[in-house]
Length: 434
Image (cartoon, rainbow, N blue to C red; front, side, top):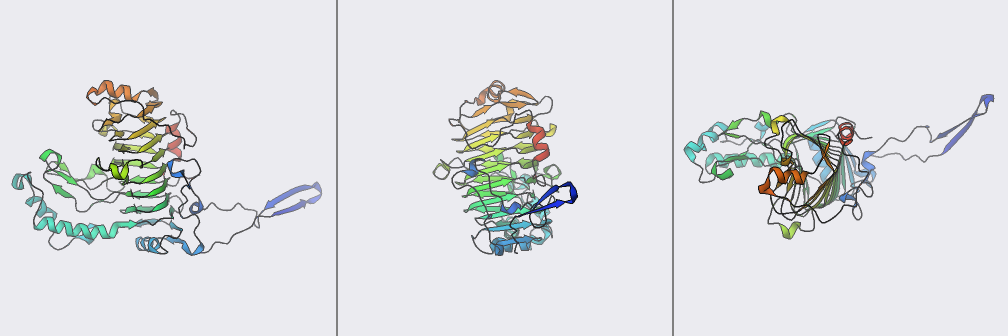
């Protein structure tokens, strides 16, 4: 794919006897179309701009610019050219599971038989699921795993073409690389076709566990996720069945940043109607890998219909500002927004939170470990609120300390929290780049 480069020059003409002078720039007098693939993260825009910044594939030569319309084309483009800078333009809607879950089923797996075999009334809750049906489930899951995971190489920009480009049912793995940009896409969370029943989970009452995160940043530095829409799409959790008294959980995280990842900016995205949104650090025992890393900035994102992890943080210096969080009535009893985990240094300021009548403001914060945080100038339902003070008053058994011990310097314009809901409603998400 080659792009002709036009060098601007001026054409000056005198029109009629009026002496009116027209100055036209360029051969056609038209502005050059915006090429999102050639754009890099601006200097000073969050942790992703640290050091050399995040440029993705913006320097790609003509041979490494791809336009893809199918899942097979997308995966082929990822593999072509190794780590050479590349731009992959997604045009239209790409479905990674176009043939449905049936395409992955191996001989012997049958959900109804699985439910009979591991019914707690028969199997109990004192040991993990083992036997022919579990073996068949594992084999079927392996088929899905091989198909829906796509591994994104370093120095890559993936960008949606126009306002309606999407990737459905895929797990995008940004694993052990550097310098990746993902922009302007609607990304539907992968549906785990074969959740695992663990009878011993949840204090031996059992639980269904799902496998696939939507976007995984794992052992990677310099990533920019911008103007995307992350959603459960066609398969909301509210429509999942219930077996053994527990929701048949088929979704995991929307954006997880883990295992020593560093220098990430998450900006102008929409997160819609999902349970587990964003995990930054995925284990209390990973200090050797995560300490001093997991530096993430989140700004001008809209979380609508959230339940938890927006984000939940371990270890990282995480700057969260100018986001809008909307909690629905159905979620108000179980929600939390900011999860304070081990050795985290969360700096959450200038955000807007919208809660339904009667919802507990104190639940906006959730304490997992003793880690001070900064939470200043946040507004709840249009009123400035000290989230730490309210949390400590409402949930005294989880007393939180103020003061993250650092102050962010890599920020773009900080908008007044009262203006944030209107700003992100119009500008955050896929198809809303200006």
